[in-house]
Image 1 (cartoon, helix red, strand yellow):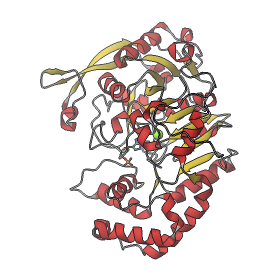
Image 2 (cartoon, rainbow, N blue to C red; image 1 turned 45 degrees about the horizontal axis):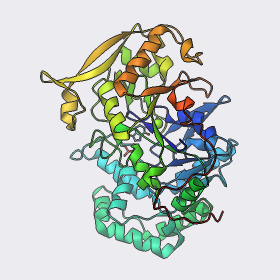
Image 3 (cartoon, helix red, strand yellow; image 1 turned 60 degrees about the vertical axis):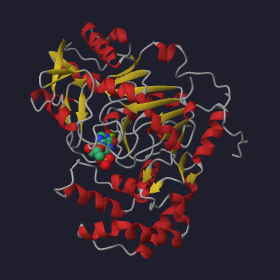
Image 4 (cartoon, rainbow, N blue to C red; image 1 turned 90 degrees about the horizontal axis):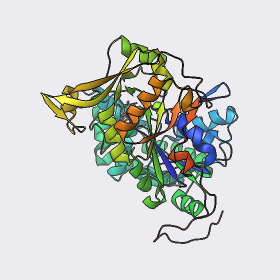
Length: 454
Ligand code: IMP
Ligand code: MG
């Protein structure tokens, strides 16, 4: 297997950045297909901490090319700052980042609309990142969005912004107490951002497909998590994009058959930031311990995350909607402190057992988790590098998570640093899922053949 997706199995913040960073040196390209600056990936190595928002974590591995697909939404100002910051920290981004010119642009007015919707009592408040993600996707779907490629012509941007304002979004802005932006001035400003970003942008579907035909290996990096997926998550308490693995084909503009395997990343417990159902949430001392030990504060917003036990019902849903092949379990050492560790294995609703995740958020709100209480190990695991280094109770805990998701555990992360991980010698590693032959491969049937020009 050559091309693997790494996706969040819970509500985001599972530590995908760390897992991607760990695997990235086995790949040539790391590609992201959805979301925007709402994502926050923290990666630590050599005593440095890198916080990434738009740019895939793979950029931190030398030689890897990072791609952002058409399905993402980008804030040009924030993206340029992120590029600058990484370059200042010694990470070369120029020449290693390729952004689809079809990706949509987030304007300040999208952030204003996001804030207004959050503060409007008659609209459900999600606790969004307030970075304009939802409104940017609304504009895109309403077909009045501005794409990166459109920034090339001031007049195109101005006309599109005017169309956007006339399509009802201007009225919304007015109602939210904002003065309407001067479309001409905004167009000129963003045309300039587009000029600076131009060296990074292009036809990524074509480029990516050509590289894959030549045998390049691609790691597809998800942002957020399964439960925040717009179609399959805890709607309406979701983000506005397809966070599941299947979203990568339309998001990147490649055929679905290029994907060979999917790894779901799960915390050893659960967290959620923002509003919405969270059955295993612990507003107790245990929840506090999880938050403090796991340093559960948002990378993007700094908000304290809601914390709770591992939710096997939600995890099984995540395994289904992603077609997971294997899982990575992160922040495992956080559990070292507990005498006993409850794991949710089913939901109970008005006296009935619910085997699957309900689609109604009000039902999920009301369910009682059925817990199986597993013995803790009360022993530091952050130094473990092999499964055999873990106490028996810790291995038993991992086995339970594996049986609940129906997936083998491929990686266990036991600390923030790159080295603090256990790479399990199971199918993932032994059957060349991640370490494949480098030879070129045939394109899936129907892929037009075109010679690479770069
Ligand atoms: P939005 O993506 O800013 O529109 O926020 C929608 C919901 O998704 C809110 O509950 C956010 O807290 C949540 N969310 C968005 N991005 C992330 C993330 O990267 N990690 C965790 N939660 C996120
Ligand atoms: Mg995050």
